[in-house]
Every structure is written in C-alpha cells, then in structure tokens.
Length: 98
Image 1 (cartoon, one colour):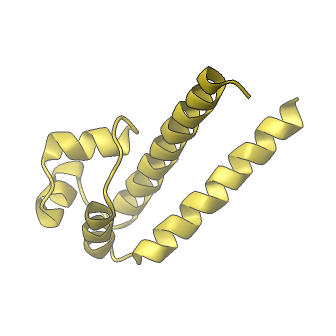
Image 2 (tube, one colour; image 1 turned 90 degrees about the horizontal axis):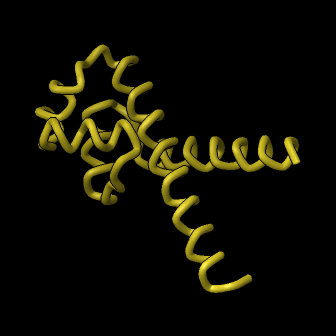
Image 3 (tube, one colour; image 1 turned 135 degrees about the vertical axis):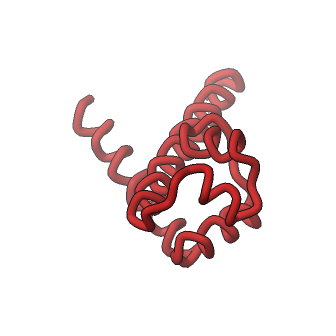
C-alpha cells in the first residue's frame, strides 16, 4: 500500500470513528433526557464543541470522553466497547457490499 493510500485509509478510519462515537453520545444523551446544551454544561464542555463531537466533526480526548460518560451515567469502557462493536458492524457491512 502506498503512503498516500495509507494516509487516506487512516483519515477514513478517523472520520468513521468520530461519526460513530458522535452517534453513540447522541443516543446516550437522548436516553438521559438531556439537551445538548445541558450535557455540555454538566460535562464542562463548550456547547459548540459538544455539537462538533456529536456530528463527528472533531475527535474527543479520553478525559472528555470520561467526563461525558460520567454525566450520561455510562462507563467510559462501555462507550468504547459500543464504539468497537459498531465499527466492526460497519466493517462487516462494507465487506458484504463488495
């Protein structure tokens, strides 16, 4: 694999991970009956940054993920496990389409 192809694959993986993590956070937030603004405030995250997390436009640090999880009543490890499951499902779906 060429360097440019590896770089492209890495970027695609990063974007997919951020998007899926954002979807997980949105689901947990709705389950907790919190607005995006409330979640941001209670987690100590800027609301505009919270929006970028939920839409997959930015990566999130482990510390921020831990704070979000605590506010949402979810273990960080459970969020990561859910992320891994959804990433594997996406990978499987892409393989099935080929």
